[in-house]
Length: 134
Image 1 (cartoon, rainbow, N blue to C red):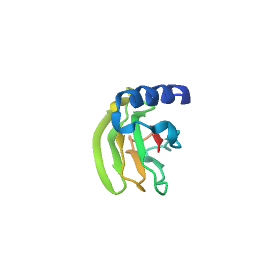
Image 2 (cartoon, rainbow, N blue to C red):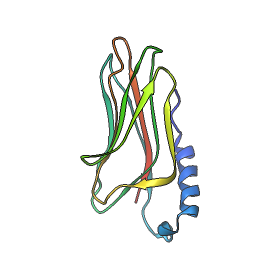
Image 3 (cartoon, one colour):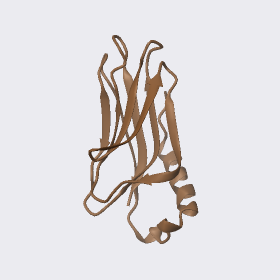
């Protein structure tokens, strides 16, 4: 399973900026793109987090969750701070891919995280969270 490259994330950001009037004037702000990804151990949850940054908001553009083996499967949770914002399910080696048509804006000073639940004995999970911070 391939993760989005920084160039792909930047392309998504550029397209979203052009289509989002509330982000006008962004060129005058400091913008940093990021990808948080990790792989679990055997039959273990994996969580990736983009830590809060003082005075800034994270914008999430994509979520990808998968399992490394065909027998795997489990719940996928996207959280903003302590609030759950999305619950889904990923199964087998087919990834759950959510590319948002418009970035999800988290509250200022709030972290965002993605958890992929343990997939079963002998199964590893993969979590990928993409976005930018302003």
